[in-house]
Image 1 (cartoon, rainbow over the protein chains, first blue to last red):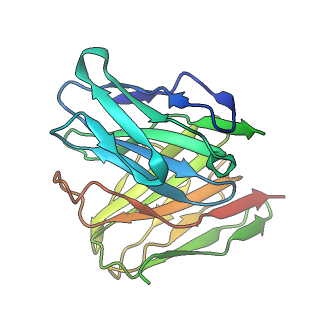
Image 2 (image 1 turned 90 degrees about the vertical axis):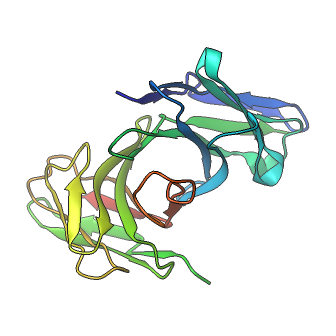
Length: 113
Length: 117
């Protein structure tokens, strides 16, 4: 069965520092991979997605992610974090006959001045 | 602007009562979904519908019911059989439920927070 693991529950970074949020997935074939962001009390907004092709994908708000098949990973990165990036980030995978989107448990990002 | 509207944003319920959460979309999407979000557990799929008048159970359907009589509407009823209904509920939609590049992107509503007193 497909699954997603986000090993970091909570991360704190300083404003202006670089960021990497980890995501590992379990799926037999090439999955469809997503990163979503959620501000407190709000819905989820799509940051970026990977379907095929170039393994480095660019998203909104200066985020990027790299698909590494050998490591079953799809880590999210940003070179310089802004205070407005404080939110919860969810990695998700989709594939298989059901086409359901499976979410990780999320990583809560705090940004300190 | 197109989007998904969930209402109410906050809802309080007494134990033993059924409540219905509304979800309306004007994106002309075929597929709609209901997720439940609890702290530290991510999002879990309750029900989904790929087309009008059809829906399937997700991973945690017990104690919930849905209907899909119109393309733009997918209401969720939290019944008294749901043992722990206090949670944040998110509705989403996508162009289709099939496997294809456009079909897989979900658009989310702002959510409804249900609290059982």
